[in-house]
Length: 269
Image 1 (cartoon, rainbow, N blue to C red):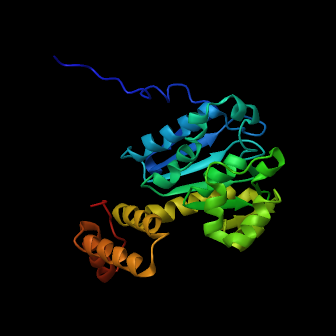
Image 2: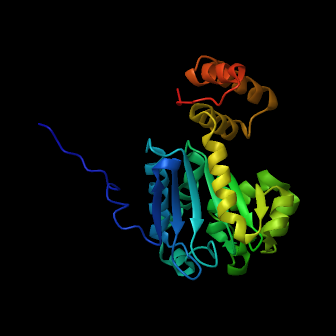
Image 3: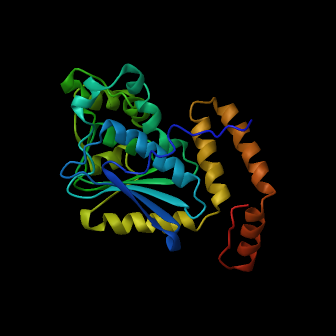
């Protein structure tokens, strides 16, 4: 007897809560846009939906680059405080997994930050591959003021980026740092005037689209998986990845384009 199975999350994206998705096929770009003015507070159910949105876009062949951005004055002031008290321990234990969706995504993910970027808003931005910060951006992990600590990977990711001393300064003092300082510390990829945020993101999207999709996926996976490795192990993994790409159509095309002094036409194989 044949049984029809139904996935428990099959309709999770039917009614996005606090965000929407834009797809620009000509640019091979998808934008996940936070929209819950004025502070774009991220609700508990929204975290599951955001994870599902990243997974759906990762599987969409039309998309090369994903951008996480927000409407209004602020990127996000963080999560719904009351929601933490109402959520079950089992649900809370999944918060970091949901927020890590941009990291697990095989495609490049860009966070476009402006205004308040606090709590989970900061944590999900840290899970992205690139953070373009407007000058108005204020980053913070303010959980100490609530008698808590960051619970979605924020302190762990930050410590990898900037070291324990600066991470303690941010986490243990609930300190806010501006976009320019975040850039100087290595948290932000770039810091630009607010009026140039959209154009800076578009420029980065176009740049990333010019590379081989296969090489991009390989580089992201390799860098993520070797972050905690010994140097010798990381070098060996890099060598294996290089060897696999050596036989790809994109590498052959890249070499031929280089010698032919033309732009390559990468196909992702």
